[in-house]
Image (cartoon, rainbow, N blue to C red):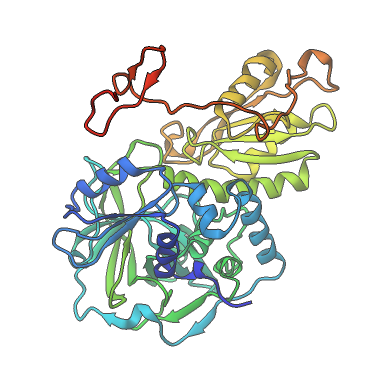
Length: 482
């Protein structure tokens, strides 16, 4: 099967545009706060956004690829509700029969190599009002283990410091931190590439939880499953790095262990600012780009909740279905930032398995802070339905599990130094079931053969009542129809 459109952001934009899923902003927009402010007004909508007229730059900026599962489903030709299962199947195929990346000599990203490194030439936005500066937040890092050469993909945030320097935040426990520690022990620098403007296959490979892709595996092969063809990689021109030749931009970078600089603040996935602190210094040694590139950025909100949450859901679902009989589905809620609250749907087979599901879910995705388990008659993507189960089926004296002093996600203020408490809610009916907990139901009916009048809903004052007491339509000039 040939490579599909998911491997190239340019083809993705064309595909979305053909479906009416690209909003084009043609007014001149300032990178300092204005661009992100406009994107925030359009966030979660059915269209991604292309800013075509960026002040001081000839290149456009693209955002919103991940902020709607409806949009992602259309792009991938999948029902949005089946995306977690699809992602899980892709990762499972990779685990069972990995397709390694294919090394090539060139690609679109080498159409132009900057003669001098100057990050200020790139249209890098400043997002939130108190952010410390412009940030790369959608670039995929491709690094190699200094000892084994195994490749890893990840997504980190990089703050622009000057023309050729970035400061990076590396989450504790990530493979990139492991590689940096190994480079320090070997008294070497750590080299890697930042690839900006890539398709969801490479993005999902970078967001796959470590529990699904251990450090000794080349997780870039996950992208091949989404592309339906081997992921292409190329050698760097200045440093011994591998980069994505189909990216819009590729940066060759180097970290000198123990060289630190101030990074932050930055508006993170939590909705809070990550604090300013000393973090690793990144030296950018080369910048490659397409002749007509598009810079991709991500708002630290719904886009992250959807993209990372989708990968978390896929891993938890696959893990639970191996371990817990009756698990039907998993959803990482937006209120939980796509990281911190999982809702598990369970068709109970035996008493006690709902609590077992809580513990297994925490183990499958350590950043989680909350887990709610509900029966299979509850819509886990409907917050009101989940709350109904909590209000009517949770027994607080037996159904609340609190785990103290456990590892969590450092960006969550509830886990200072990555240590805090977690809580699980067993909102399932007592097993075996009794009539007391049977939901009221109505006969399923179709309206296809039913005569029903559905008048247009109008704002007060936009219509006038006639003599017969019914509203009459307004004329084109706004007056009442005669």
